[in-house]
Image (cartoon, rainbow, N blue to C red; front, side):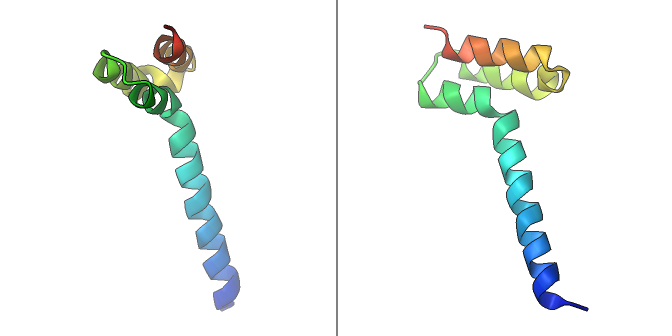
Length: 66
């Protein structure tokens, strides 16, 4: 078994997982960074409907609008 190859494969796998996780929750991260009053509602929309892409876009627009 190639330990070095396995190690770097798992490191890249974890990195890509965390990157995709952060991208999926980008609307929530933006809402937290901008200290929005409705961060919980944006998170819930993102969590439950973000997979539909339309829900993700709505959450993203909601989190960046002023």
